[in-house]
Amino acid sequence: MSDPKVSPIEALSPASRAWGEIGPHSDQPQWGMVVDQERCIGCWSCAVICKSENNVPLGMWWNRILTEGEALDQPEVTRREGLEMHWLPLACQHCENAPCVKVCPVQATYHRSDGIVMQDTDRCIGCRYCMIACPYGVRNFNWGAPARPTPHDTGMVPARPLGTVEKCTMCVHRLAEGQVPSCVWSCPAQARTFGDLNDANSRVTTLIRDREATVLLEEVGTKPSVFYLPPRRRSPL
Image 1 (cartoon, rainbow, N blue to C red):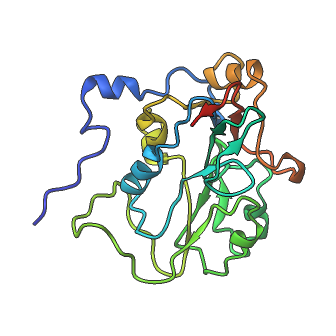
Image 2: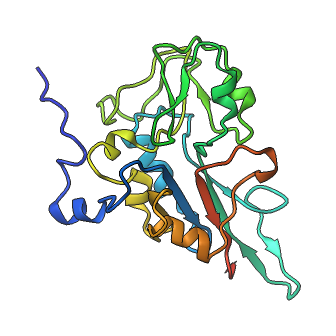
């Protein structure tokens, strides 16, 4: 009989656990995230740890790193004939006015009380209405048997069944232990900040206010809980 899986939080050293603490928040938090595009270096560390932690199979990404510009992964030519580039990490935006929640015929997609949009794979019937409705294209469908880089079960959450939809959960299993999502914890450039949008003095609300944060596709009215800080300078290549 194999040994029981160790919680990712229990496996951390005290210093690492302290680094990942959510910190003070209101009695009724609304969780949100800020992504600083000036700090993001496009390393994909957040995407890789997301796959490992959440048992995401090969060929599927809950978290992707896009390059802003007219063509994917093509730097912009500046007026001084230089090349510049910056990146846009993209995952579920955990929208307040989520189209995916509205169209699900079996209520498999729903809001938690803290604002996080969840997917109940026991209720999901695989109709993929939510995938069509999502304007960000961040939902994935389990078409067949999952392929994994190792036969060992490395994920910290159970795999999802075939014929169901899955996506970013903000690492709710970590939130339950007072820890930030793994993408925030692992970012070497500290480009991600997680916290309580209901706390006017939290780090996330301060960044949103002071750096004039934006949201993706604001015109569609989804009211995302993920905010982006545009770069004040670009990365020369």
